[in-house]
Figure 1 (cartoon, rainbow, N blue to C red):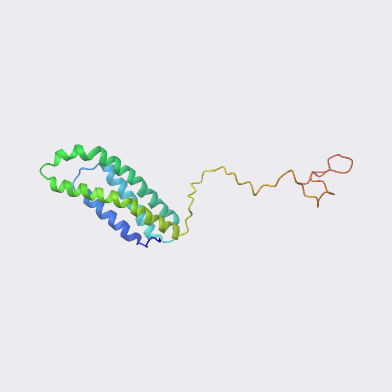
Figure 2: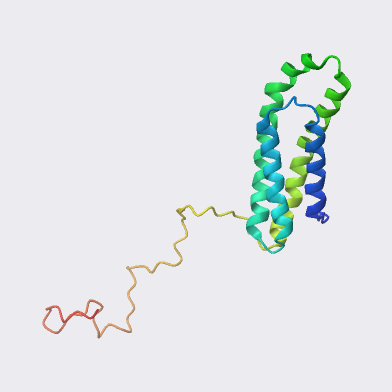
Length: 169
């Protein structure tokens, strides 16, 4: 099953609109606003540079991080703040609903952004520049089997008589 292509502009616009509606009243902390707006700013960067793999990858990472931070923010602030908005309970429910809808759409958006990352030339394995240890030893030559074609010339550059010859640098 192939995932349909969705425009990156539509993803950024939908999350921007949901973030604005979620922040219509100040029940969420400033870190919620800054985290989501920062991820959306990176999304705008990914829209502006159509060939950049890094911009799409950073937007994908930003969306994934805001999924976790949104869950933490809702867990910490939703029940506590709800009692303060008894007069504007409808507005509070609307803002909370938009924040939760944004959270529910983020994993779906991550799937579409990952597809765009692959279309722009990204790899399945994301390399962050850390060295890694692999078990692939195909590039190594075994010392058990020496090449017989060069047996007349010693591989250690020794002259006749077993004494080392001049070093060639």
